[in-house]
Length: 210
Image (cartoon, rainbow, N blue to C red; front, side, top):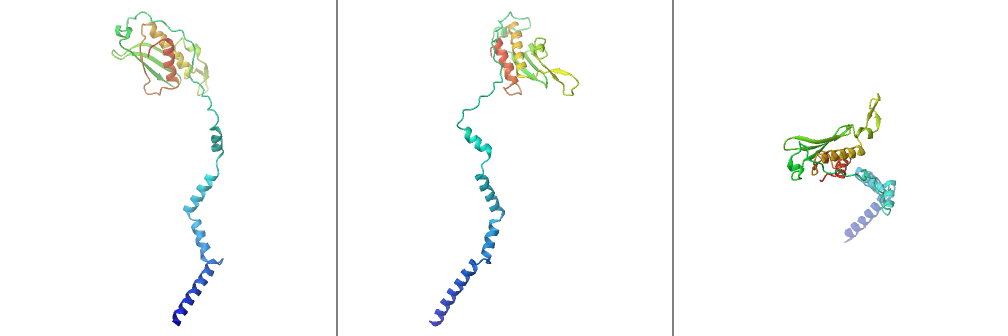
């Protein structure tokens, strides 16, 4: 029994000395915790927490703007009272079923860097029934001049929403004068937005049905 008591006393002394050694400033425990805290994973975690605590100014402004009413979006379309052109007599190159509205020709739109083109096409015979563009004599006086890219002179700027609206109006007027009043709009490869939408709205304002 004496040796057992001596073993218990020895174990207690070893445990006490180990606690004192680990709690001392020179023990490897602080070094171990320092290394673990400086690992890449922990550093990324600390940086992420710091970013979460620091809100950017844009986030603060967005939070403050939640209660404010939404700003009004500028209207890119042109709204005006357009005198509708009456449907004229059937032209010689217009088929009877198109004039009666039984079949609809197609409005197609093309854009270049400087101008906009629109046509009414009969797809059965591949024939253009009416056309208009920003180079038409009726629209050219409405365009403003801008410098060329090389700065050598000036050119007419037909690549605008207002010019596209005028193209649609002129196309609708020409179509109605030839007895065409029902069409369908083909936006092609373009989105129904901006200048393409303005062409459609101008043709609809002139009196075309689509």
